[in-house]
Length: 42
Image 1 (tube, rainbow, N blue to C red):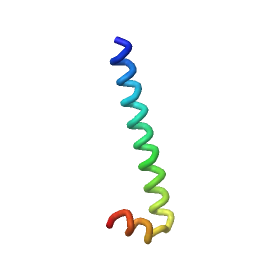
Image 2 (image 1 turned 180 degrees about the vertical axis):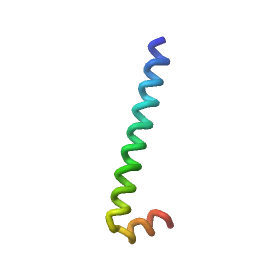
Image 3 (image 1 turned 135 degrees about the vertical axis):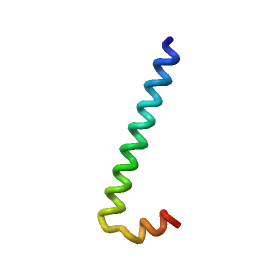
């Protein structure tokens, strides 16, 4: 039981971290760094 709870906790943590990083990345891209966006897309 502890293992499944721990896996669920890590899954939530991973999703939260990825979501947070995605939000920061989008905010950074939309803040006017078009060259950086072009580099990332390519």
